[in-house]
Image 1 (cartoon, protein in one colour):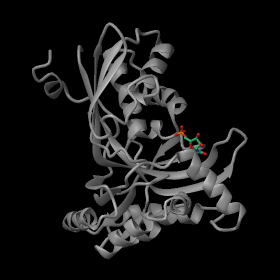
Image 2 (image 1 turned 45 degrees about the vertical axis):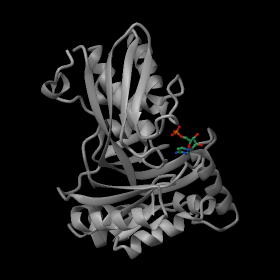
Image 3 (image 1 turned 180 degrees about the vertical axis):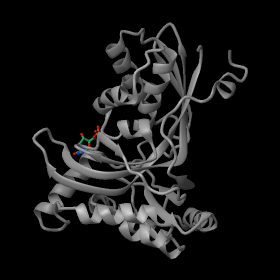
Image 4 (image 1 turned 90 degrees about the vertical axis):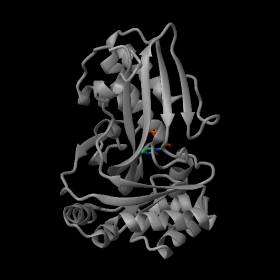
Length: 313
Ligand code: C5P
């Protein structure tokens, strides 16, 4: 294969329970990841050097050097397999670069899958997931997609078998980002002051979510969504409250901060409702842009050859 193209979805967290801070600075997590149909796409081919170009969301803001998570993923896979790391990567970014949707982590997952195919290194998903975990806590999930529970610091991923329901989501991306470490630190501070929910025994809440995923009722699923980081993101960025209120007034069944924010995500009753909510949010001035998407969708995977090679070979 001379060119490999890999689309990769964004993620949201249907549930994000943050435990105590560990000795290594990370927090013990129990999270339910959910991949939604907003995609970045990475293209890789062999080159005389390792270089990355991009178009789309975040052009000019996303670093195009060794800090880029996709470049780190290429180097990590090359180090593990002995492959020649010189590849030309191109990123088509469509996932809003705003935080909370794991766009950078998605690109890293896509780069692992793409280079594994380009180099014919043939690693299994669990082997790729071990490399992915070193790049970031969310990266392993994006190799699998669907709906999955993440434990440890989020990197230990097990699929959640739901029904075959399609859920309709609206994403509202904020202007500018929020630093993930700062959001976790804010949660610790709020907890120390008794201002945020302390770590919980969450078995019953998770069971409620899993049961909701097997029913076909967005209201039931909406009531089971939860994000411990929401309070911290709202504390650092109080204007997110306006975004959340606006989405609910527009008819969303539920709304919450996505991951560590500042993106917000809303559950809609159906496709029409999601379009209406997205339009109203977009014109409300409470967010930078909105997108609709359904979930769950599969994770990073090589596009079939017929599409990959259209005129490029
Ligand atoms: O793993 P990742 O690089 O995405 O994490 C970014 C930062 O988020 C970490 O450096 C840490 O401050 C915080 N984090 C955490 N606990 C987790 C995941 C992330 O405290 N489980």
